[in-house]
Image 1: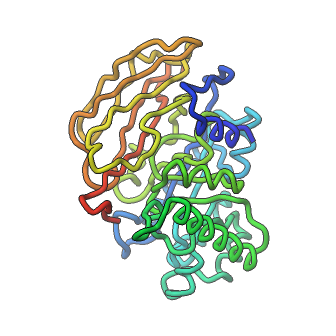
Image 2 (image 1 turned 180 degrees about the vertical axis):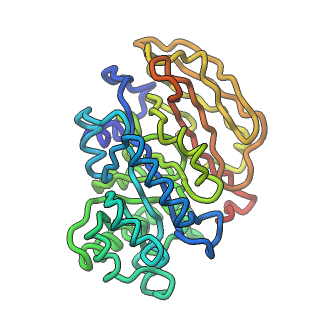
Image 3 (image 1 turned 60 degrees about the vertical axis):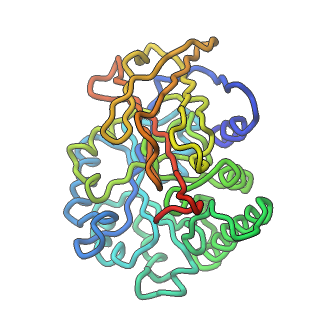
Length: 359
C-alpha cells in the first residue's frame, strides 16, 4: 500500500521525500465521535439531532461515505470521488448503540468503532457488548482496535527502557486485535491512538505490524498522510456545529512531504518549537496565501525554496505550548475550487515537570 510505503520512507533519515506530483487529488474527511446523547460529557458528545444533521448533510451534498479500508484502497489507486468522508467512533460506549442504532439503519453508512476489550470486560455497564457490536456490523460497522486499556501509550513505566516500553505497547495492541477477531471474526488492521497521542517509534511499530493508525489532529486524509498518523476531524461538542464542520468536510489534503519536529511529544525544554513543513508546490494553490493558527493567533509562515518542486515553510509559534495537547492548523485556499481549503495540522504534547499531562 502506497500510504504505508510513504510512512516507512519518512522514517528514514533523509532531507525530504519527493513523490510523483498529483496535488490536485482530493482527500477523505474522517469524522471522529465518542458519545451519542445529551446526558454525557459535552466535550466528547454529539446529540442524536446533531449526528443526524451531519449524516443528512453528507447525503444532501453528494458525499461518498467510505469505510476506512475502501478509503485507503482508493487513495492508493487515485480513484477518490470529489467529495469523500468516513465516520469513526472511539471507545464503544453503550450509548452509541442505544442512541445511534436507528440512524445507522436509516443512512446505512459504513463506519468504524474503535474499542478497548479490557475496559469492556472491566466495566461492562458502560460499553457495548460483543453481541451489540456484532449486530452493528449488519448496519455498516467495522470493529477496530483502540488498545486494550486506553492508557497514555507514549508514557513509560518507571525504569522501563525504550525497548521494553515498545514491546509492552506491541503486546497491548496485538492482544486487543486478537480478542476482537476471536469475538467477531477477522477485522482489518485499523488502530486509533488513545487521546490521539503517538510518537515516531509507536507509529513505526504499528505500520510494521500492518496497521493503519488514526490520530486526532485535524485535516483530511490524502496520499501524503503518514500511514502511522492519519488525521481525523473531531465532530463533537463545539466541533459539531455544522456551519464550521462544512468547511472541514470540504477541505483538501495539503501535500506536506516532511514535517518537523517529527514527534508530537516535546521535551520539557521545548516549550516553543519551530515548525518546518516541506510542501509540494502546485498550481492548485498559492503557498503565499497560507495562514497558520495556534490558539487565537494567526501566523504567517516564512517560505524558502527547496528545489524539485518543493518549498519549505518555517513557522514560529507566538507563545509557549500549553501543558498537554495542542495543535497548529495551517490552511491555504484552493485556486481552482471556490470555498475549499487545503489543510494540514501539526499536533503537540507538552509534558509538565513530571513528564505527564492531563487526559
